[in-house]
Every structure is written in structure tokens, then in C-alpha cells.
Image 1 (cartoon, helix red, strand yellow):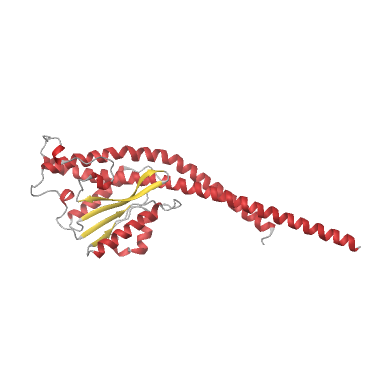
Image 2 (image 1 turned 45 degrees about the horizontal axis):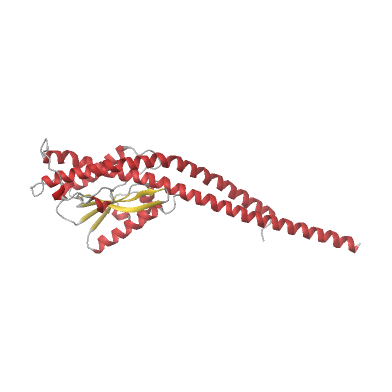
Length: 299
């Protein structure tokens, strides 16, 4: 049995830890509201971009020389996966869910004879895949997690993807990230960026897909090809940015939940140790009294 001194030290250590986890929970809760508003505001914009490009793509369907961001390279041999995680931990299974889904996707693609490349976003993804698949990493993006996500991060990442595509180094590009549902639920999802997927229901954008026969007829100015050349790189950046915002909101929600659970567990542990401390103290007092009484009777 531990001594009273050891029990006091352990209780004091857990109380200090509880203060830290409680503070982290409050900080995450404060950041969550702003991050959630940003993520929810970006969803309709990203969905509208995809619908608009769907209309443009339908108007140019069958024409030769379609942009690679829309139609891809015509092959399906080299896949670029972009797992998006946080830079920091202490957020439960938030990052490990992305790692697991990415590993499953890598295994599936390699079993089909595909070549897989990785572009980790977030320090946790970089550290994990440096251990598991360091030979597949072609680039990285870190250092933005925990802050307001600037659009420049998505812009730079979109430029990297576009450069790899134009150089013929990749054929397909897919994001792997956590889609924010609420503070307790973040769902890992895959979003194919290249070639662009028109069926929005397959990527959980929250917007209903539009049937070709029900689509409105538009006249485009300038022509469709020019608009696609202008809008496709922008759409790539918007889709990446929306995913980064989903990740930021999910990270804060997962951290708030994890720190709340840690604070509760620390409180229960303190209560349990306090009972042990009191019982041990009472036992020691009782033993001392017995020794005093026994000595007095012996005299």
C-alpha cells in the first residue's frame, strides 16, 4: 500500500493535470464556435462551385482537349492521396481515423496494381506516414493547424496538385479528411479532386445531385472552354479549403470532447485516491492508538 506522502503527491499531480485539461477544453470550445461557423459557411459555396462546373462540363461533354483537372489524364495508374490531419494531438481518435482510412485506401490501390503517392497535410499525418510509407511521400504541408486557416494554404496546395498533374506525375488525386458533423462526431471521408466527380452525393457535400434532363439551359459568356480554364483551378482550391475548414472544426470539436473526458476521469481518479488516502490515514491513526493503549496497559 502506498504511503500517505505518495498518495498526497499523486493526488496533487492529478489535480494539476485536471487544471490543464480543463483549460484546454475551454480553449477548444472557444475556437470551435468560430471554426464551425467557417466550415458550415464554406459548404454551400463549395457545392455551388461543383454544380456550376457540372453545368459547364455538361455543355462541353464530348469535345476534345478537355482540361486535365476536369477529365484527368485519361489513365488511372498513379494516385495521389492527400491525408489531412492536425499538427497537434490530444484530440482522441481524430487523426488516427484519417490514418486508418488512408492506409486502407493505399492497400486497396496497391492490390489493384496502382502506384500511390502521398502528400501529407498536418504534422501528425507527416510523422505517421514517415514511419509507415516514407517512400511514397512527394511533398508536405504543415504549420497551419490550430489557427484560422488562410486561403493561401489551399491555394498553394492546389498549385502543387496542378503542377504534378500537368507534369504527368499523377493521374488521380483524392483528399482524405474528417468531415465535421458535431463536437462529438467527425466522419472520415474521401473526396476525389482529379478527375472531378460530378455526383455530389458521393462526396457528402450536402447538396442534391441534378439530373441531366432537369438541368437548366444556359448561355455562357465567354465560351465554356474559357470559363472551365479559369474556374477549374479555383474550384480545386475551394474544395481543398472547405476540407481544411472541416478539419479545423473537427479538430477543435474532438479536442474539446477528449479534454472533457480527461477532466472527468481525473476527477473520478482524485475521488478514488482521496478515499484511499482517508482510509490509510484512519488506519495509521488507529494503529497508533492501539500501540499507545497497549503500552499503557503494559506499564
